[in-house]
Image 1 (cartoon, rainbow, N blue to C red):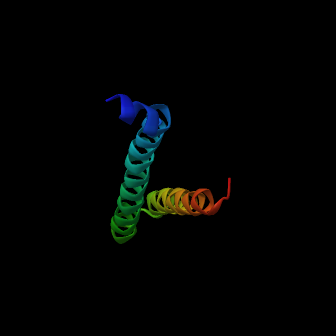
Image 2 (cartoon, rainbow, N blue to C red):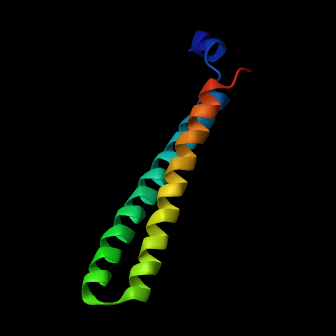
Length: 82
């Protein structure tokens, strides 16, 4: 156990696990909201509710933008030289 304590930086490993958990759940939730907004927008448009359709479409676009931003941020972090 002593060897593992000197080889592994447990604090850094904990930060990576916590960040991965939070971002994994966050990106999944954002993409789910994008799907929800797109489907509700389509349903509202079919039923004649143009204001609701626009609001749900805006929700879908914002959620997709959040997903895209997370992907870009991940690529930047991975390619950043320290």
